Length: 290
Ligand code: 13P
Image (cartoon, rainbow, N blue to C red; front, top):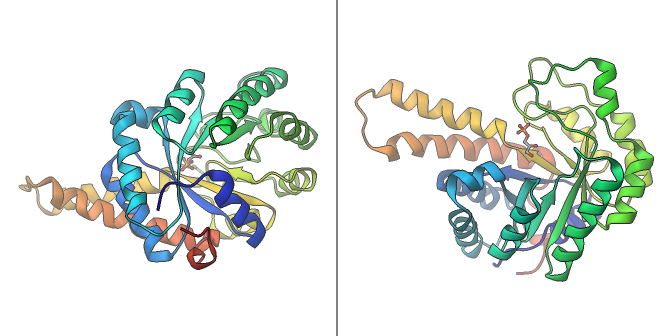
């Protein structure tokens, strides 16, 4: 079926109380792993590309790969720009056929973030695409910050209410203690803050930095209103580990398919597991008609 928007899949998820996985891709094998997992689990899915992934693979390659994947399946698929920080890049993605974009204005003061995000919402909505905004700062796991510094970067619930009202975003990424990359210890999520945000807004909430977050914490976050869950690092880890194993087992191997095939299979398994934890598995028959 043709690509669908983020608003469509998240509306359905919100009505039924589950979250949709948003998996980062940067090559054909990862796109195939995401779609293969979605088909095997009967799950709606968001395939997202960061600006870095677009730089690596090329905008047309990414768009064509995901369009091809979506066209051959009955699973609802969203093509989403992850962490768009550049207004022009956001426009290029919309023009190429992305059905959703994230505009990440989180590094700006609130007023500027609202103004930038609203501008993107006006353009995207005019052409039938969705927008995710970010409020609070979701750092990397490598950032060395103290507890009080970390608190200062977290989303303030009242500001979230103002942000969604004034921008009209379709989804809001919040900072509640997760970070991008591989965690050193167990991540500490601020569930009270998440509940407070969910109590003040009707907009679906997005959790970034979800790799390495224990399954029970993910389930708790979904119960508290998280509807889109971003996963990149957990795919990278199993993908590259499988490549390393294949090369170690057969140091003379020269066929890329013998190295990338097992990596694709490993990624499919991890994505299938995530879909079951998020509650999106088995939702295909209740989903948007094709
Ligand atoms: P991870 O690094 O935890 O996979 O997070 C990915 C992400 O949030 C992309 O926006």
